[in-house]
Image (cartoon, rainbow, N blue to C red; front, top):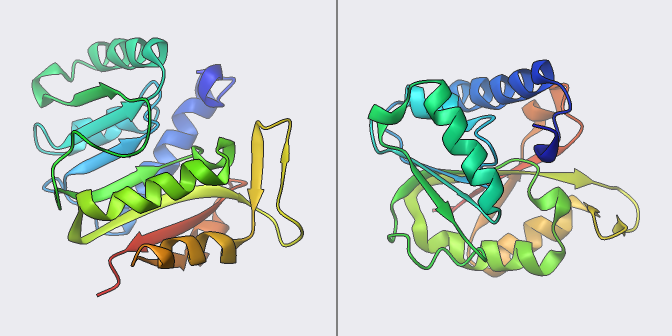
Length: 195
């Protein structure tokens, strides 16, 4: 749990529920097909797996160890019959995923630890796998001042930088004001095809 930013079980449960409730408040239904980027040990994922129709959850992560922890979370909650997909990835090109498939793509506390080239790679490729009517929500550490990082571990971006990056790839990004009312310290953008 600590590896994904929750140093206490209570915090792990609270943040996962906050993310889940937000998605449901924004219309996510059991029929949605969700890609969870940086799924970790399923802090959000186990709730989504339980809620979604079988086979509609796909979690990806760059850490084999964290995916083993995700498998443990899955079995602890008895969710094997929901047939979730958990995949190890080395980048965010989504090369093995189908075109226009996911109605919801989600990345929580991923870009706050990512240099701009990683975010660029994701936005360059996410449009291909995103359903025409789907959305991609991601959180980021926002600054109103100069963009910077702390020890290449925590990255701070201006909202305009990320909106412009999405636009470069034919996507529309919207700052989610309602997320700012949550107790989470990061901000959120929603990316769509913008049709």
